[in-house]
Image (spheres, rainbow, N blue to C red):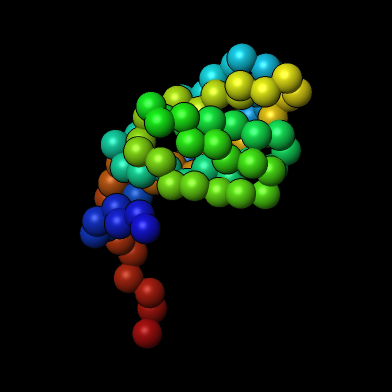
Length: 91
């Protein structure tokens, strides 16, 4: 579970196709949601594998690496810094 705290925050969506041996790191101070849509990737120091169709929450700034022989496609959702006060919905 990702709990960013109060207030409106920026949300960053990053999609990338990683070649074999290539890595992606998304700068974030909060956990990130990683979804692999093709191939398989490893994440973090423990090299946890994320297969096609699987997702995982990782520590912000974790390197995601394609250790396989084929390209892999990944989507990363990272919640950013506060962007100001939350807007109240009209009644």
